[in-house]
Length: 112
Length: 112
Image (tube, rainbow over all chains, first blue to last red; front, side, top):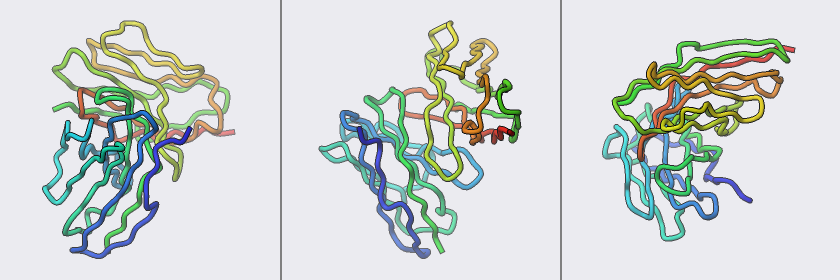
């Protein structure tokens, strides 16, 4: 069975640009969560979506937004990129909103 | 807000020996979940073990076991018969509803 997939694997952007990251959950999983992992730190919770509705939001500015599609895949959008947005962005899926989360390989974003 | 503390930034162990990684957390909640995840270098986050707070019995998964002390808010991971493939960053995580909080991680090196 395929695990969580994310695209692209790597991305380079410049300050002020916008970026969209994509995530496909494990088949049958209806919840997707997004995390930001800065080098040398643990992941920080950004969003969780379950059944296409936002169920949780971490302490991130409004430049960060996300959505979940009818097939349960998800997109994370970041507007007006800052240098500090450079990080590994992790997506995790779970059967439901308070179930064990399984992570994808991440998208490494570099903002220049 | 929930916080997770891993007080050991780095640890090392000889192959075939046993090592224990520490984790403490702060919460006023009674029902929640705790996890240990492993992140090998440049690879994705892998679930090691999960513990439900309402269960008194400590979780075990093959060579991995936990010592869950709810009153002390402590959740340590014991790795028995350490293998070279256990070399990785280990993250302790606390989850309540949609929000999962991670510690800063412990870098474990298994030496031959």
